[in-house]
Amino acid sequence: MESSRPALGARLYRWAVGPLELSVEALVLVASLFWAVSANRLFFAGALAERSWSDPSAWGFAAALVVLVVALHAALLGTLATRWTVKPLIALLSVAAAAATFYVEAFGVVMDPSMLRNVLRTNPAEAGELMTPALWLHLALYAGVPLLLLWRVRVAPRPWLASAWRRAALLLLATLAALGALMTVFQPFASLMRNQKELRYRITPASLVWSTGAVLAADAKGASRPRQAIGEDAAAGSSWALRRKPLVVVLVVGETARAANWGLSGAPRQTTPQLAALPVVNFTDVSACGTNTEVSLPCMFAPVGRRDYDEDRIRGQQSLMHVLARAGVAVQWRDNQSGCKGVCDGLPSETVASLQLPGLCADGHCLDEGLVQDLDQRLNSAQGTQLWVLHMLGNHGPSYFRRYPARFARFRPECREDDLRRCSIEQVVNAYDNALLYTDEVLATAIRRLQAHAGAVDSALLFVSDHGESLGEQGLFLHGLPYPIAPEVQKRVPMVLWTSAGLEQAAGMRSGCLGPELQRRARTPVAHDHLFHTVLGLLDVRTALYQPELDLTGTCRTPSAP
Ligand SMILES: [Zn+2]
Image (tube, rainbow, N blue to C red):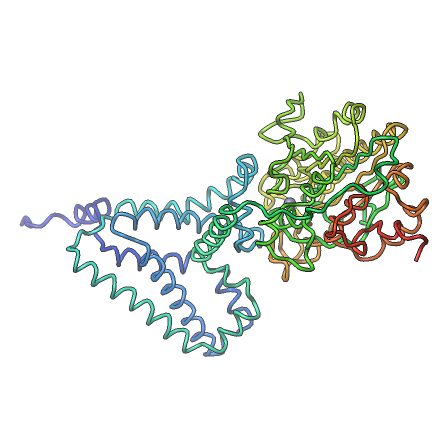
């Protein structure tokens, strides 16, 4: 007998390919549930790390956390979504959550506002190196599948009043569920959030929305007013009138070089053979201001540093370069990375890529040699007092092997993958150390050129890295963890100073003070905080901002050694 209803196969087929009709509110709930289980593994793992599953209270705590995460996302999305925006919003947040969880799980990074600032400021060449097959696979699974399902959903149209009621009910329900869950576990939850502040940034994608909002709000606040002038009293020191030669200070800002692998600082293997053969002062215990470029760079050029760190204040003010320019120093920023982060706003700057050097650039990146290639010409035509800042690409990860030419691949086997997880730790460290060998070459080349011109130009070269790097220790890679929880390897950086024989006299320093005295100082703890004041000292620029105790050559201005 023939049935009047379609066959089961046909019904299944229609269900599988036909439109799926849902209300905005139902869609919000489904998406919130999906994110809770797909993107919050590390949040739950971290929150439950100290508990045993044989303890019944652990199950109650876990259940409350799940309700909390679902309710939080339902409230967030329920507030933002309309019938027309709900699908694009879910699509965008699903892709963002999938990409974020990939990096968080692979490298142990934390998606706080400072990391989001890094992500939002990444240039296309940097981003390209992060697009690995493993990422695409992860995106296909955690974003592609939900996007396919979402594409099939048709948002049910409803009369205005009915949808307003439903929305109010959803928000009320989400709020009550969150409050209820919170009340049942308030004590342990509050202490967890106090003790592990970074855990809140593992609630995904809510943390991405929060961090992006925080960055945009801070930028909007900063953009609405011009940078506040600092050091308006800056003036040439008394030594300037006595100089017979030009004075050039070269400040090399390193990238991701960590002290733990720096040959001069006693690393297990020699990664700085050329610098070791030159008369340089190596500072062995230097603390970085931040653990990523976006924090460290502005901080290094600010008078306040880490000891009195205030991000808004630093971003809202002029930098060391503006102070020097005001005193009559000719300043220039040459960049081989992602820009000067506001440090050189309105001042002369150029990129290595714009110099069109043959054979040095590929895939949007240039080798760091490009920073120093024309040093002879620059020194030949140097006049007056100058500061040349060279911003390296250095050890920018994860593709360390792209940072040096083949002849520097001395430590082998080296990791030649953009995706670090496809290599052994040994291969990753080898590639990282090869990149340090190349930094050693670039710095030594610059110093030898300065030495060769020392008869005509007094000079100094100061190199300091912006932050360190994790190379697999405790399962962590790259950098950017919040400062209080970041491992030492992300916070300790190399710093090297070389000065020409004529510098002491040119900068009005006591004769001989840059010798053994400074070598002794170089073995004591110092920080990025010293950079601002030390450069003022090397160039003999006077301002009320100058703090002699933070000038590493500060004792050179006192009559005799302490
Ligand atoms: Zn950096």
